[in-house]
Each structure stands twice: as C-alpha cells, then as structure tokens.
Image 1: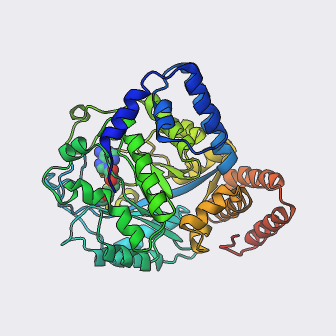
Image 2: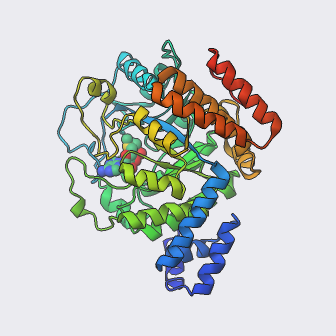
Image 3: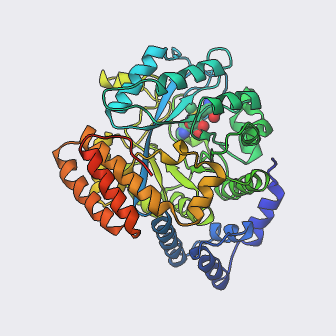
Length: 458
Ligand code: SAM
C-alpha cells in the first residue's frame, strides 16, 4: 500500500476552482450514488459557495436516509491499558507523560463490562496503548475473552471491535480466531511529513508499517477493517483523498474496502496544546468532510465519538454519520471510576450525557438507536455485507433488527418515559416496513421480546 502524494496534490491543484457546471455534474452523479473518481471527490473538496455546500449537505442527508433509514448504531469504548512506548505528540498516553500507568486485571475488565452492560451496551470498541511488554497480544486476547464471557443477569457484550496498534499477520490471525468484529486502526494522518512530525522516535513512527496494517489484517482473514484520520494533524483535503486511495487499494486487492470510517477530531490532551497543530479544522469544514465522505463512500459506516459536542453530533447524524458512541469514558477503568465520582481522560470528550439520556433524545427526533450485531454474528462480513448493503436490503434486515434491539433496551434498561416514547416509535417504524412478511415477522419478534425472549434477529 502506498499513498501517492504527488497525484493527490496535482488533483487538488487541477480542481482548485471548479466551475458551477462541473460541480453540478459531480453532485448529480453523487445523488445517484454512482462511484465518484478521485478527481470528482477533489472537486467536492474544493466547493466553497454556500449554495453548493447546501446542496452537498442535502445529498448527504438523502443518501443517509435512503441507505440507513433513520437508524443509528450505538457503541462504547473500553480502555484496558494505557501503557505506551510511543511519543505521539497529540496523545495523553505518550510515554513522556508522567502518570501512573494502568492495565486492567481480568476482574477489573469484568467489572467494566458489567457497567457497560448495565447501560445497555452490546457492542464495544476495545482500546489500548502500544506496549509489546506490558500489553502484549496475549493480554489483548485474554481481555477479549474476559469481555465475551462476562454475562450479567440481563445479557452480554455481543461484538467487540478492536482498536490496537498495527501488528503482524500472525497476531491478526489470533485476533480473528478470538472472533473480533471490526479491526479499527486510524492512520492518524496520511500526510507523511505530518505523520513523521507527530510520531517521532517510536514504534508507531514507521509510516509504511502503519499504512500497510490493513493489508496484513486482510491477509490474516479479517475482512471488516475500520479506517480513520485524526483530523487536525495534516491538511484535510489531502487526508480525504488519501483515505479514498487507501479504500480503493483495499477494494482492488481484497475485494472489499473499509467497513467503517471514523472521523475523530483532535482534542486537548495532557502534555499538548492545540496551538501546536497548524491543521485544526473548524466545525463547518468538519461538516463538509463528513458530508463528502457520505457521498464518496455511501455504503461505509461513518463513526462519530463523544469527542464531539451534543450539538455537533445531532447535526452530523443528519449529514451522514451512522454510528455513535454513548456514555464514553476514555480512561482505563473509567466506567468503574466514574461510578465512584472520579474521571480521568486520554483526551477531552464533549458529550457527557448518559446513554439513556442520549437514547431519549434520539427517540424524540424519531431516530432508531440500534444495538444490532446480527450481520457479524451471521457471517455477513466483508464483501458479503457490502453485497447486502449495495442491493438495498439493509432496510429489510437492519431496520427490523434495530427495532428488536431497541425493544430489548427499553425493557431491560429503560424508564417510563422511554417505554412510552420508544414503543410508539417502534410501532410507527414497523408500519413503514415495506415487505409484508418482514413486517409481520418483526411485529411477532417484538412481541416475543416483550414476553421475555432475547437476542432475536434476522
Ligand atoms: N494504540 C492504538 C494505535 O496506535 O492505533 C490505539 C490508539 S488510541 C487508544 C485510539 C485513538 O485515539 C488514536 O488512534 C488517536 O487517533 C486518538 N487520539 C489520541 N489522542 C487524541 C487527541 N488528543 N484527540 C483526539 N483523539 C486522539
């Protein structure tokens, strides 16, 4: 895998001031969900008239609605170790930051998992700093096992996505055998000079090794990979085009590109100041990036974390985001500490609402929070998932599954208010299911769940 910087820079230069006609033709193509070329994406990146941007946002909204309906997948991160040998200039875990390092024991992981389950979570992203001695792959595998085997009286975590440092084919095979969901790795920045400046003298400092991590993961049989850029480290237009190049490479070599793309934005952390970073982006540019990603990758899940404020998250859900985290703690053992009134962080988060509060506000906006993990558990991963998404069948499978998991959530973790509003939304959404058989089956399954059954899915 290589990023051809010259090609990207030339494309951005060539398309610097696109005419109205050229922009319109790209927007029309995007509205039909046709594949956009790198040049066409560069044209979108170079739009700056408000009128055309409004059109861009409107198309992103329509694509989101058509492919995902009003569903939004919910997850939470679980930080297990903050030992780190790297010196990423932006990260609170960097080795030069002097604080007592922690690695959760199996019992502590079980306690954290129970708290996550008590908040209704079924899907987590397991996170750790990079330290081959204090946090080797065996530790990560044991942590995964500890999470999957922790059962509460209500349920268990059903899918663990893993966000750990780039590693070897051998280690990816072991993660695959441990039944992880998506392997997530942010490139941080595709812009090599920015990458090298922000990852000095460290294991993670090898740009090419980091960039080729998904090739090794695919070689090991992991076919759901989640990419991302930490926006603020490098020039944003370059980042978006480079991410498209990465996706095209994976599609060409392995028949499937990113399963998800995350859009973290740089936040204040211990030992750094945002003033040191020349590529910070404002809210409007961020909205534009999310909308362009939705047009460029219509079938790829777009993930937004609690780094963003409630207001920003609400806006971006309509501009293309399909997955959000809720009630997140970005500290090792953070959920247990929060229950005890203490909060430490890897970086600052902005949406501090509890999951139930977030869910109520989504239901008020007629958005269906989804805890569904069915595709991965039914083997619909990699290109099998993409074929389903592209055939337009997501609506007939994912919406019913979202409604079933929302029913579970309401019954097991909800209060009177969400019971009232949530069941009204569920009834309304069932009526909208076009396929008669699927509608009847969903109705029947929701009733079975209300009578006490759990974990039903299509
Ligand atoms: N150690 C793994 C790696 O090297 O990829 C996992 C990294 S960390 C637990 C998860 C992510 O947090 C990083 O990939 C980075 O993008 C993000 N992060 C670190 N510092 C941040 C900051 N100041 N603001 C926002 N996100 C940050």
